[in-house]
Image 1 (cartoon, rainbow, N blue to C red):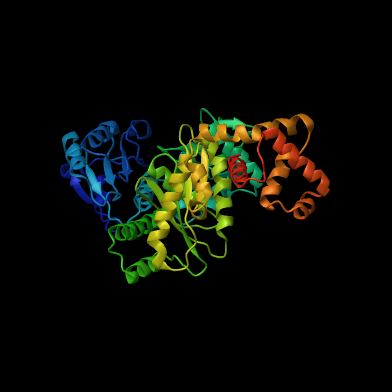
Image 2 (image 1 turned 90 degrees about the vertical axis):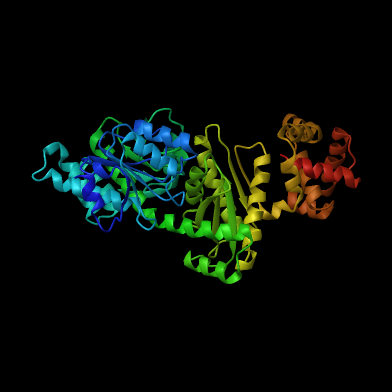
Length: 499
């Protein structure tokens, strides 16, 4: 097919910005990338689609265009709500056709159109080596589901095959997969130096070219070595990437609406009816409670993908990038805030293996049941995430309730000072417990939580009151502190919270 065929496709509504005299160029493939150095991930003759998230100014535009090489054309999305003039100029200087796509037309629709045209051009009957590939592509563009696509490959090759998220969540598979097996496969995918990789008889490799970070990338897992059936499996991965872009098309529109809502809230121009209207458009219900979540994990576009993944399948929300971090509005829909926090942390712990030099920090707002509190919720989530960042852990979550508690003060203390404070107070007790096989730290914690009530402590620990009195006396002797002093008790509480 040729560029002119694309431009003449009314349902795509492509607009030509540069290269009007180059529309007879052939299109031999299609790819999507938002890397500032795209050269390794595109091929000559391909139509390259980009959302412009890499754009930071004229220098980035020139570098991106130079890196494209001999591609057929560049198609711009509308992540920046318009094509930058410096990109238009860079494409014109390089003799590269630049086309732009309306916001309501997803990249997947362009990709599908190109794929259909290329399949038609191949003609029939297909050469044997391309027969399987064409059958897979035909399955997808003719309305087949992702499950049918993966099952078709699994049946043809007689092996188990799955598409998984970076947290180990099964997107689709040829047969059931235990959750713990999915987490192990995710660990292999996130930590392998090179991909494809193999561990314990399973092979994994990423889905999609030019993915910005593994923690934001789906991957393919199958039984067998990476070299087996490589052509067909690579083709499957490419088609799954196409289907993922189709599934995410609706999210693109949702993010535009959420961006508008956030802009209104930050400018102070948001009236209650306008907030309610946009929440209704986003299908965000507040009846069971609504909260905001803020996250950072590398670049903002990675954070958006990560937060979207962490929220699934418990409480999918609307996610966008704002102020250098990912922001989500999450209807609880019958879940509790505690359930959500636990769910987020569980997924984040899996992703921790693939963070590299980055950290993953999360902030949750308090729960609200009406749109009037939306602005305060978002700000509270941002503040909670900032507090999480003050800690030294690779993965950290702070909730809105903790913003107004001593935990916020603890999080703001530098890690080295926290470790020193904890070691000075609890170190002697921990050493004694380890050497004598006692439970002084546990007894101290129970004493503080039960406010020195001996009967409650005895019932909680199933230990005689006299034994508890002896243990507390030993705690005071080893630490040189008196638990009858309010200030000393506060110090012990803080040290225990720092553990």
